[in-house]
Length: 147
Image (tube, rainbow, N blue to C red; front, side):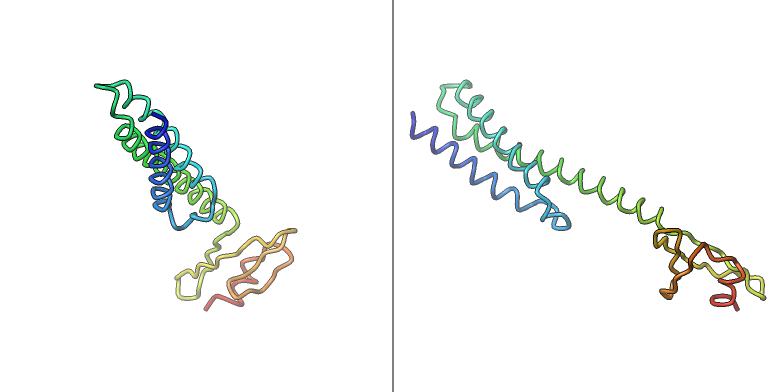
């Protein structure tokens, strides 16, 4: 009995470690996504072993642990993927709030978009790297970017 339990836990750990390799490569260095898959895999493996032991003839611990570990690791990976998507959306929104697009009218009736980045302390950075001590006026930007 002790040998079966050790084998079940060992198989669960191996499957969990293998499943964590499927986390998003963009944020693979972030520990939270890996922890989600590992934690869910261990919980799934334990619950699978308990269910496998109690279903049928009581000899299904290994199969139950394997199925529970795979399901738990998959659910943990899906949770980590959701965290990745949320983080990407937040970073995108943060980047958008740090920029401002000014439309400069040209002599021919067209407009030139000029993207300004907030540089902190009330300063703005232009597309060519120039720094303005305050938000530049339309005339200042027209001299540099208009035609």
